[in-house]
Image (cartoon, rainbow, N blue to C red; front, top):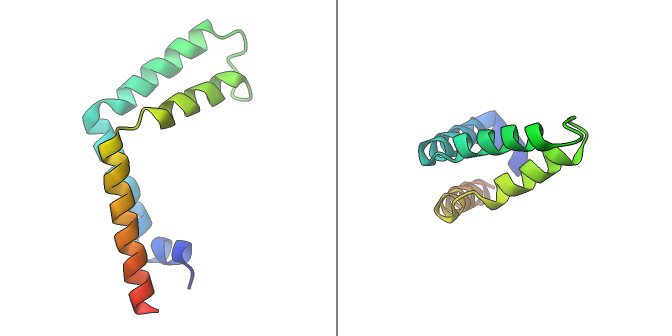
Length: 88
């Protein structure tokens, strides 16, 4: 069983995803990104999903994730990988 398969079948992927979503929501990150997206779409010459607007918002969103949240997520992922390796 590979890591991705284990994460999905064990429910760990959903746990990580839900945890990350909640942390980002609690910091106001999601609201900031919604505001950024609205602003970009209202000022964009090409507000379609295929345009540069989405790429720009995605890049800014990734760059603005708080470092402590990134670090905590990486630690959780590393712990899961260690767990998988121990079971193998």
